[in-house]
Image (cartoon, rainbow, N blue to C red; front, top):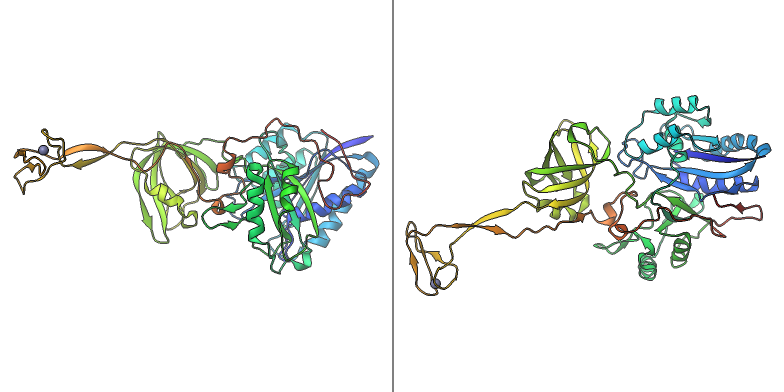
Length: 453
Ligand SMILES: [Zn+2]
């Protein structure tokens, strides 16, 4: 008998420079030697990016494969020994979690996974679900990793999805300079066109494919198809060597966290949501270069902030005026001493720009030129034809708005992994076949078998 397995892992980061996707790459290689038949690429699932105690990426992994029933009992001990080797469990903020299920994830797990994209889920809720569903699991520390592991297993990427090729260096080189050549990134971006995305920040001209932290990731290339990201990687030159690589299927670049439109009164800390409202106070710049404005809907009003790192996105925000109808993409910041509940703006769609009026001098009725003041209390005079209007008054006209009816995003360097970038606005892989290509990671062996699901 062969069994379909869904295995989730999360929070396998360590201060010594490990990361969950790297651990996943090692685990895939080991599971292949057990005779796993892969039914999907490893899934890299990005969760709600606003969760405070997580790193900016907040990514968990799901592996989906078929295994002979007699090999099943080897998985848990393998996971335990690998995690204990990989993670420094004495480090206080490391809470690795892993869980696996046989057969299809239940509707409750799917629902849990959906919530994890935009809400915060208490660890206890995750633990209870694992208990009630009788999932095989491993957990260390406070068990937070179980939440991500469950959320990854339950996210089958049935909607839009993309791919990422991740190249790793040897873990003992994690503290050294990567030396990824910016010229090679620019060349790759040019050659690949819209088959890859978020490679470069347009304003700075700097590549965005290499992280900055001391982790084993050398670089990652996001794109539409596995063949695309593998080809793109062949352009990249770096000082450090690639030790191994793997292609992940992922929800990056799909905007999956922003599918819920929420009333202002229903917003809660750390939520990811879309708010449909009307600007109720003009934007202002505060200390640190952040821009604050207010919106209201039928349920209430709230302050919104475009923070300094969003760069010239703030110039768009500064053009907003009272009465503009907007759809804002937000992460909710909890109230603090200096501010109430605040919306961190990570995108804004202008639905309807309010009319901006301004006062101006009247037009000459004889020659249609704009008249000038004839002096205090003396009305207006035309300097072109000499016409005088002693009773003339200023007139109100429509002022041109410096904003269009469309979506605006911060520059790529300030975007979330989940943000749907401008280049993917009209792009979707939803419903496309996802059969595995011949080689999707570097350490494939004769044992590696793949099967379409
Ligand atoms: Zn005139």
